[in-house]
Structure formats: C-alpha cells, structure tokens
Length: 169
Image 1 (cartoon, one colour):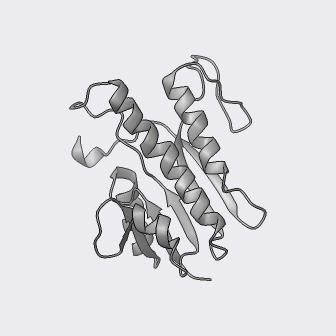
Image 2 (spheres, rainbow, N blue to C red):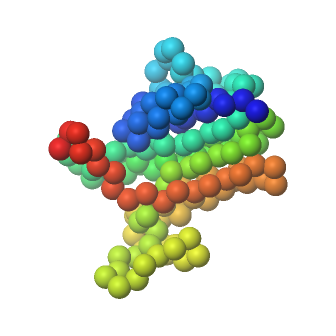
C-alpha cells in the first residue's frame, strides 16, 4: 500500500507540523491549499479532479484560527470559521467516497461540543451537546466528517483543544 497522505490545512499550524513529521517518516505528503504550489493541490482541483490516485490516507486539519487577535468575532468571521471547518470536512468526505484507494480519514475537530465542567472527564462515549455557537459548530463539523463513513474505510475524529507551540511563546 502507498504511503501517500493528503492533508487539508497542511500549511496551517497543526498541518505543517504533521506534514514534516510524516515526510520525515517516509510518507509522500500532498497538501490541499487555497494556493497552488509544489506538492499541493487546490480545493478547486480536489472538487474537479478528486483525490490523486496514489493517496491512501487523508487528514483534515483545516480551520480558520478562532483565536486570531486581529479579527473581531463578527457574524462574517463566524461564517468564515464555520465554512473553513464544516465545508472542508464535507468536501473531503465526498471526495473520499469516490476514492476507493483511500483507506483512512482522520478529521481534526474541536472539544467545544462538551459543556464546560470542573468535575466531568469526557470520553468518546459522551454525547456532544448543542449549547452555543462553538458546540453547534463542533457537532456540524463531526457530522460533515462522518458523511464519508463506509465499511471499507477507517474514519477517526480527533477532538482537539487549544494547540500551542512552545518554540514561539
């Protein structure tokens, strides 16, 4: 089986680190990006041409930075956040359904679907709750990623909290 991974959001914070790690470990990595370039395909190319035939695994690490201090939390910004997560997950899920060679799909999601609690430790067995914008976003994000579920593919949803880089602190 090919060791070729397609990463949505591969130029972002998490995706770029993952790309470097996979390349260092012998994987060929192609990034989905808004901008064309070497070892990249654009979202438009993905929608028109599908997933490259040599790709065996897909990771979705896309998403507008919700903690961007230069952006106000306006309805327009919230729509950008929504589109960057839900729409990208749905696009990748649909492309994966048409790509029989892809055997695994990892979609990075958020933890905001769980209500804050000082005592509860959440697990994958806990159901998310729609209690505000972020929880609604996370629930829709996971639903979009699951739309690519099938018997012959491994789909993993990884709920991540805030990600920091100690080298830039």
